[in-house]
Length: 522
Image 1 (cartoon, one colour):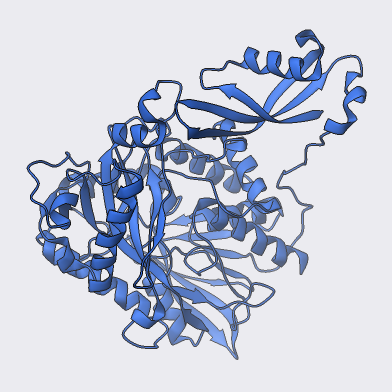
Image 2 (image 1 turned 45 degrees about the vertical axis):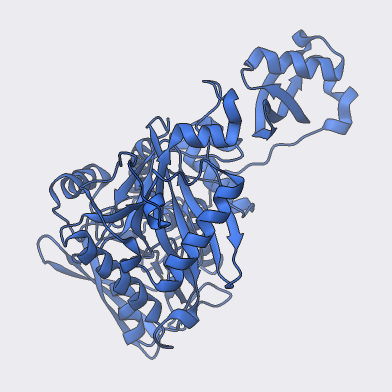
């Protein structure tokens, strides 16, 4: 195969157009190209209205013609996630079936190790019903919600797969997701995403393979205790949250693949003298906007059906030393209630693969440092989060309404109208500064003004700010060594909740890395 880079194509291009363009570059007939596929794709909208795609393309040519173009030679790598089978006395246990736990369990299953997965939430089919019941009827299931359940928090998100990390395991994640039903474009898009609708079926497909290889997935089973002797893990205790039945497992390898909302696990580890450090994170709101405004902001007046819903990523550094930035932008999506316990408000964003809804939203965050916490206690960041989530709950009316305010009102301007929100159950319009730390509220005001100078459609007075966005990352790091093991032998902290990842891909690749390390030591 040969590879051509920097192929500029109009936004309405067809597959035939690519072949014709490549043939022209190589000065050959298009009929001499036997195979063509996109290897990388991005959009260049810097010089509106001249918007175009930039492609890298892989080609196969007939009659050994590729030998004339050795300067373009390209060898595809094998990213398959396969292993020779091994046997182990005590089966590995994976706690949490989000991206890191799912991929760790998949690796163990293909290694022949028949993992046991403990997931306090429900399978995605039942989890979806629990979430709809919360959004529509305000009935929260503490064990099965947007944070907890099969697929983790990522299942109810935009399903973004772009990351600043570009290692071999990340490529393996993408290829596995594709093999389990994700669209092929995730392999080459510069900003790939799956969408919450497609993710639900993909996690089911992964579950089925793990089970077919002898793995065991215990849904509605919550980790309740760790039996440790001389700083060595001996047994794991779990409870069925529906029947209250308790189970004890003997294992030498416990992977803690819990998410950033597993506060009970953090407290348990602290009580058992596991090393935990405070970690900076971020806090703010969800900003909800009209997608057509963002399309115009990014593409100008030349937006058409050949262009996907526009996104953005913005950051500014303020004189007060804080940074304001957007995170997890969801084009054509909705703002979702993401609480995992009574008495708290947590918001997030979600969108389907088509990103077809009228609104979009993004986290609008301010960095929080460990100096902002009330003490040096390892779990002080957890308490900081909880404090402001409770304030948001009270400000919203103590009924899971989220506090909200138009951008204009937040900036001190009278606003006659505001956009219609996608948030369910409902919003309570109020002064959102009352449920934000002072430094967050003031920094948000300054940051919004700075963003709007360069991007006038970003913060129209009618746009909404919905509080509170507090769980963009974990507030702790569970310390691990070069073998990914904690100071308690046999316990392996993994993924986003442990402080080693941020998002679907990096969480999944961390699960792969830890599983590979354990495999290498068997």
